[in-house]
Length: 471
Ligand code: NAD
Image 1 (cartoon, protein in one colour):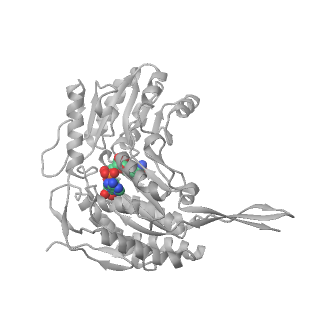
Image 2: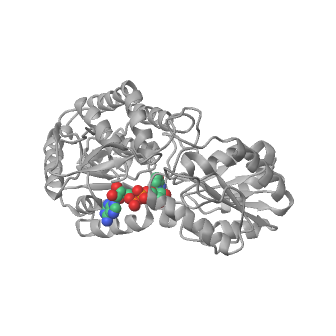
Image 3: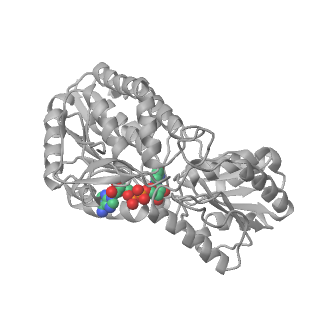
């Protein structure tokens, strides 16, 4: 009998009339059964979160910090169970930058949130006025998450929301709901009932959340098209939004780069989680003078990275998470080949079962090809040649994306000058895809609105309330 997972609403386990099988992308075996929640579950969850908000909004700073500490502890204590479930459901390996790493990140982020605070600011203390600015909770936060880093992203949404006195209803991706259902079941037991609630089901539940008047704010991580729909459906109720959307991060390798030394950073910047990472390196512009050396250095690493069944501990990359993504990667690589691109390594799907695609480096490829212009979200890196740095910067800045970018080289002044001209929320120098809980993260252009992490990330879960007193 397959294991059944359930929703958690108001601190109670809630089932659904219908369950769907969730399958392991490495071998198609059934991981467990997901409840298919309905609009009535959305209503129940929002009602439970609203009820909890009535008292949680008045909780002390110490209680809120304590709640985040409790979340960090639950995640640490249950990391083994959750990481195995995450690997089986999501496909990422246990080791390397896989599920154990993701669980470590969850506990670290929740733990960091404990140390954060937004003290009252005195704006004026004069013979005339005493004016204070307070940061107050918004209400019920609706959290909608994707399938690539499902648990880490859930914690990015939940921990700052609770730390600032909000309550939460989270809806995970229909591709990876089980690990979130189980994580919230565990986390909820350590918190007052209704402070965090989880519902599962189809995309329509996300749409319902984003338009519901009982939701005070939406925090969404996912694709640009869905982000646009959410913004539209949140408009009638003027909900504040944090939108963390897609990226197509460029890297620019300058002529003085020591590519042999930097290749490892470029490789994992691109292939972390098999490229299924918003801020992964997704196109690499390399100066003509070191193009061949860069390709060789990356190919040498690629040949040594073990790809395969995620439960085998020596594997460092697993399958793509779902069939839709697998088909998209195949389609983009085939399209690039039709336009003259060549696979330096990889370039053909691996034999099944499972959605396995090898590490692929594509050369002889130009801007304007879909593989370069679109977010491929797979283990494929197009490597493009340039001769003039200004031209590389202009090409890197093309398109609607602006999540992150990187520049690689030796001369610090030139690195900084190029970094200043790359259009992105984060520009890395000699690294890529490096995030930390104290460093604000988010996109410009169509890659998003708002920031997560750091003080700015915490403030995003609050409203400003001014108390303006005559002295
Ligand atoms: P997606 O947009 O297809 O789905 C994300 C979530 O939105 C899912 O929970 C889905 O059920 C829900 N959803 C779908 N339609 C909806 C609607 N109309 N209203 C409300 N919710 C709806 O994205 P995905 O394929 O799961 O994730 C991959 C994308 O996420 C990539 O583009 C990636 O770059 C992006 N991403 C961004 C970040 C970041 O921090 N910027 C991080 C991770 C992933």
